Length: 127
Image 1 (tube, helix red, strand yellow):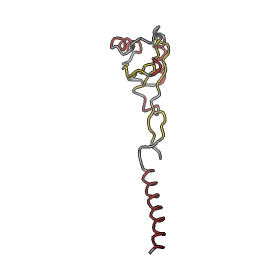
Image 2: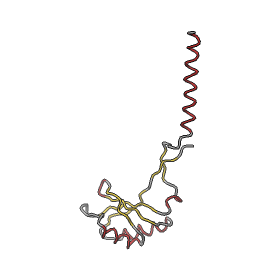
Image 3: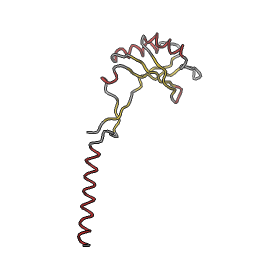
Image 4: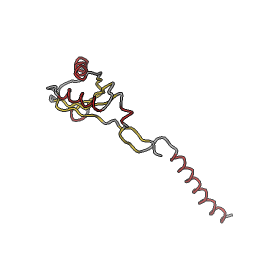
């Protein structure tokens, strides 16, 4: 009986290991993170905007409406970031050329220090 138990335990542990590997490979929650594909970002993008005056409040509705007018598309204030920058969502962006034009228009505003695209990260399925 003792010999049988010694042989059964490694076999059982091996079987559990194989089953867990198969279950993990079929899981949809992969650990890799990559930038979202261009096609999936077509309808919206996010911009990081840093203002010259650190005390400036860009979340005011009137100010966001001014930015939307200059960008010629709807903009939504999302949140502040560390370092004094702020994140805005830009709606209805058709391609990178349009996003570049929006960034250039906003960069010309005197209160803005810089504008850059915020890369939206998304978990990637491991295959």
